[in-house]
Length: 467
Ligand code: URP
Ligand code: ZN
Ligand code: ZN
View 1 (spheres, helix red, strand yellow):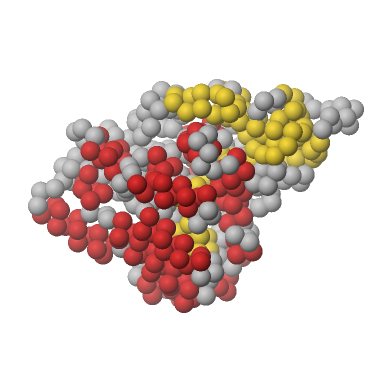
View 2 (cartoon, rainbow, N blue to C red):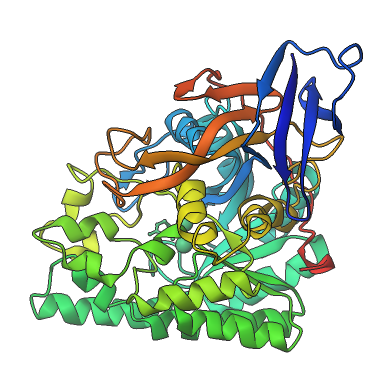
């Protein structure tokens, strides 16, 4: 199928100009003003006058169909990627889990089964590492070299589930120096948090807000500093995931000022929600139980400044939805049993445009850079993804800056019974979404197909080259 997008304002991380884009067989073939119709005949033409034509969003932090906290995240690879597409995201990087006693190969096979034939947009995987014996080091090499799994998530939190010790982290970091992989770190001090949680429960403090009160920002700051120190000693880059607190950003900034290749992402929930949400009536605070937790409101400004100044390089979602009924309810009498995570895969672009671009906190170019281009570079997908250029995949969003949307369970497509932004009106939303040259979202209608997404075999991170 061939597609011609006319008269749109093409915005990439670097450019902003009006032109036509011609796509054929899934890739961008030509870009120019008034492309000659005899050479560029298209099966379909979209008039994008007055709209932005931007590279499809890339969300490098999602958890679809993930067993966690005694249940499984509520979106599978079909429902989750349809919701992503509605929100203007055309590629995700999800997480396969290498459980203790099993191999990375088994983990990848398991997660490929969850996604293959279901995802409607392209998808890749990071590998969550929960133990790293000598055989595991070889596994890491094979993942990078043979499978296109070029990044590994390690946890400094969740003792007994995912947490690994500093020695394991150091071994993994060191190995990425040889195999070209990148370590992504969940940086919270799990030991301290575990003690604080036990103490709170002993005192009968069981409400959702104690989830936040037992995970102080200092626990995130300490772990972020330690993770960076470990990467410095290993002599390799590091990427901090879901950074929520000024305390942690301070550590990243200080490292970057010293010239270290330390990178970090934040997520919309940390930019738009705050500790106050935990004080909502009854059990409603459970909607926001995620790790790291929401912080006091003042952190938001610090994070926005970090995004503007490139101390933070990526906005991802950490989409990990659990329904209030039956799933979050597991922790009705004990906050530590509330499954950690919240929905967000569909609302990233609209929220960041409305709350970041419109008030002038970041430019449109920076918006594209944070939500598409740098994620692609950081995780080995650029320039196939993350830009609009001749030869790149035709993953394109026609974004209408004047379209208003009211966020809520009824208007959104995620398979979850609440939305953290219920009732919030945003200006600016996708009017069409194109994946590999096919229109998959047309206005308010999904016209893609189950299994239409491809597995992404990623290259090594290109981050150290220039970020
Ligand atoms: O609360 C969260 N973030 N749930 C997903 C798992 C993780 O740590 O990213
Ligand atoms: Zn995490
Ligand atoms: Zn996560």
